[in-house]
Image (tube, rainbow, N blue to C red):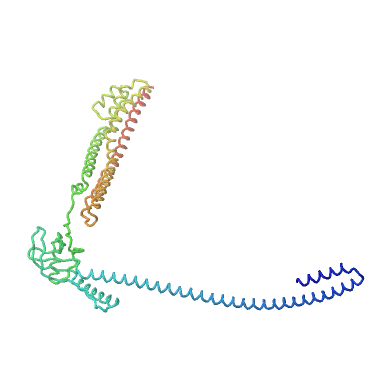
Amino acid sequence: MSKIILTIFLITFSLFANPASDSDKVLQRAYAKEFAFLKAQKESLLNQLKHQSSDNSKKMAEARKEVDALQSKLLGFEVKIDAAQERLLKVQQAEQGSIDNSAIVDGTITQAKATLEPYGIDVKFDKNANYSQKMQYLFNKSIDLINRLSMITKESGSFYLQDGSKADGEIIKIGNIAAYGTSPKAAGALAPAGNGKYKLWNAPEATDTANMLSKNQIPSPMHIFIYENLKKEVEYKSDKSAIDVVDEGGIIGWIIVGLGLLGLLFIFIRIILLLIAGKNTTSMTQTVMKEIESGATSQEALESIKDKNGSVARVIKATLRNLNRDRLHLEDIISENMLNESSRLDRFNSIVLVFAAVAPLLGLLGTVTGMIATFDIITEYGTGDPKLLAGGISIALVTTELGLIVAIPLLLIGNLLSGWASSIKDKMEHSALSIVNIYHKRND
């Protein structure tokens, strides 16, 4: 490139240095020479560029092929890696499953040994035994135990009678779920007495069953007492009286019963009052109306019922004593007397309804008290012995039952008596107004 610039410089300088007529020829020769040189340079450069481009294209094609081949290999490796990872995961899962299964089998074997040993079966495995052989061994031992427990066996033994004395005789075992005892003193079904001992159960109907089994006979029906184990004593069955049930409810239970008895007393008194108040209402009203219709004076009508008692009689007597007054004043007198009698007719009604409302609330109080006592016992002793929890649960349930037993009859009878009192009030008003109407109709 520098050579070309130098040539151009020399040509220009020669033009300015030799301005003669031969300059055009010199310039043409220089231009022609330079043109030829430049053309040759151009062709050389174009050839070089062409060869270079061709080489670059070949190299790029080869590079692309190599890249494609490498990418294919990489993809293949990735597929193999994914497959290997999946196989590894399956192997790990299978290994974990095998470990879990081994733990389950070990737990099953331990539990089976703990179950069989109390029955005198000593479980011993061969040192080289695998899991399958151990499970088969335990299965065979279990089948033998089931066959033994499903049989009726007899053995000599002793058991306690209901009075606490001890009787020697024969014990007939039905597997490990029930037993019967026979002796010269008594026979019958046996129940756990604790620590592996038996006691005679208070079920007289099982005596024939025990005697027949002792003679190798199968009774029908079979009276049986089924127990879970002989470690804990089973209490005798006892019929509870009403006092026993109330005692289970504690002091709150007795309070509820007291309210119920007091409510019944008030109901009895109220019934007597209502019977007296509504006694002979219809006949008394008809007697007075006949007297008025026949032209008798109010005093004569009053004399006809002077021996009558009760709320209705008092209202009618007050009406007759004031028949000579104007109607509005007379109606006010009747209303006033009816109000006075209403308080007598409604006597003790509110007390009965209050008792009916308070009784279930006291039952709820007993429930809360019993549950608190139960939770206190659980906190201190746990839940191992249900007998410890029985007291609190009895208070919780019995008081609720007593509250409802007291509340329902009091509420029902109280409302029925309220309806009866309302009926007497209506008859009272109707009788008084009927007498007033007849009197005014007669005098009009």
